[in-house]
Image 1 (tube, rainbow, N blue to C red):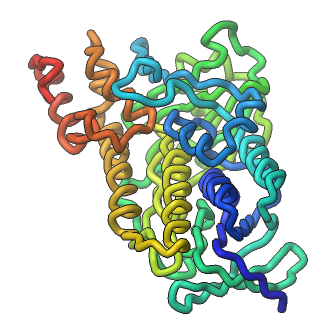
Image 2 (image 1 turned 180 degrees about the horizontal axis):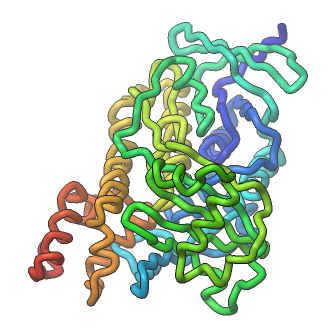
Length: 418
């Protein structure tokens, strides 16, 4: 059996694995990326948030991505009936990027892997990890390629960026239920033949059909638009009924007063994909010789597009810490990795939970708007969920609920109340 020796093995070539590989490639150590799929491949996660731009830049991937002319995302729009709330990333609390992209993930991920390969990163596509053993911090991974050929990789550290594949959580029995209520989604792409002109043509939108039911609309620069319905799993199953996913998504479009004319007669580019009970968690995010990043560790909900942000945040952080450890430094993975990531996860978890209780929607759609409150929420939506100078980060566990209660009971609050 062929045996390969590397410093760091990265499982998965999505955004998390790519930023980890990009960072480590610049450090001139031996890395290998294995990816189960053949690229380009279809995957969800098409709306980014500005925080990810820091990661792509640090990983050396930003110039190659910027050259693709993906649709710029300057903010996000939330619609409920006749009330529209628009968040502008250039008008947020604190520092940070003012824009990001709306991207067909098949193209986006393919560009990243091509750029990494151009720089000399070894990426093995259509290759799966089927077994792993640890001897101290060193690991022996058994992999199988598309021809059924087995080989081994000996690595000093493993970064699991396998996404929904959740390779190490499955093999090491680290999976646990998410604390979030079960939600599901159905999505596809359409040729946006009725796309209007101006900002409406490019505006990403979330159309709230009911407290726990919303439609996403993500226009791409290639003329396609991603459409998806998100709801509690029971509602999605009722919507689907005896029909297929295409029927369910068509019914969802009919529920939208705002978008029904634009998308009523479009055809889907592929059979709509059903993602069921997608939220996930793990018992621990690291162990001796490995770290879990992105969806392999935790996935919340697509409502605030946090998935890719957590993937790249954890991916590049794991790469930095693993590199320091290989260089002989003592790394406190609990404090520097798990505790750090958990702070951001906790903030977004609160926002997801309070979205579905309706409390956050009260803040979004109350009129008149409070500009100061909106700027602070906008910073969270931009992904800057570790900036505890922002009270909507630091006091996330109570500020939304408290303010929603005050608004619903016609109480007033000042801009410095929190």
